Image (cartoon, rainbow, N blue to C red):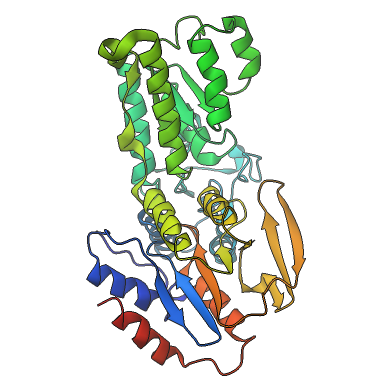
Length: 410
């Protein structure tokens, strides 16, 4: 796989060595067991996969290249490059301006842009309408388009579904930039509807099975279906694609559910005329990170620290998996760990910060799962580890711990 020129300050001296050792001993990614860093009184369990993915590293490389290649020019990002505050803040410090926030609210009016300006398309991609607006202004969007290739793969699959006369069901969050972009691309050639989870899939299936009148569809899914959607006929043939950062197992479960719905309606022999298999749209990085999280959870631990941006969808799903097994704290940096008795962390479902006291159990050795989302720099994970280690006496030297950990992977 291609390597990217990511600024050195995003990389780490600790996590990088662990990851590199696992790449050497497990090049085909068959082993999802974690690495263990044993510092004596505290042990960190490090999942096989986490942190920057292909799409994120590609986006970061292109963004910093845009800065280097265009001194003196106005440089804009459509919205956050990725859902990580440290990356976005650094780009802002270097002079990049955000045109809108993650909800699509405008910071910079379109009238301010002209053909000499540089506009970077974020890793999530953007809508067909916004892309056309930029092109009409004469802005060369293709040079700094960082749209993740796996997001583009979903768009291509949606386009093919439309050509084959299937309706596209998008598993995603309707306000998320990637889902807005995918929805926009999808409805160019196919009736499209966005669902959040299995609960909404079950609601949609009632219309497919005609258990509810088609007229109710428009209220039930208000704001989530394409213009001209005909609930009477557009749910007869469907395929499922996803926002690539959603829980991969949930996307597959939703697809399997609609497949079974069509089997129940049309029989085993004829269901393929009504359901398109779209398994190939699942993002490898999201899938690997989630499988690695399940792998580390099998080992057991006293708590989990999950590091990432609070608006990061893929990070939130890692948090959900960990919370099912143990106390889990979602933090964006080491700064949220105030001391061994107080931690500030994010409650993703309720979208609010919380403070927990006595969060660190008094036991030795303490076992901590340490992981991050796909948009979090390894350097930030290193900093969290260093912060926690500062609360313990007589910890082993880093070189000794790394040598022991890497020896067990050979």
